[in-house]
Image (cartoon, rainbow, N blue to C red; front, side, top):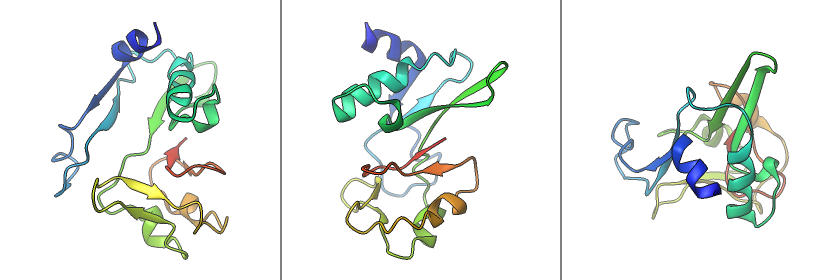
Length: 138
């Protein structure tokens, strides 16, 4: 049931890499169709269960933001930027691109909690979960 729901609303692909200016392919990126999103949060629940083994939307790596809860909800994910501004500003180099996979990751060991990465993100807002090794945006 959950996988069927996710497949109808989300697309996991590697075809977007060249469009994002990547020289090295990232194995998969998540593309969300905002037209199909109802803001129900099922994707947050399913992805948190899949990635961390429990239903915890704050750890889902996809977030539904509510700019106006009565009118507009938007699913957002880490964009895996070619030159991530969050990584460039990080004073401890906790945010890096994995050379083998091309995926942007966050080192829990190197994080110092300064949250400068959140201020550097130019599109919406970046948040790094307290125990997360992957960034997400909301």
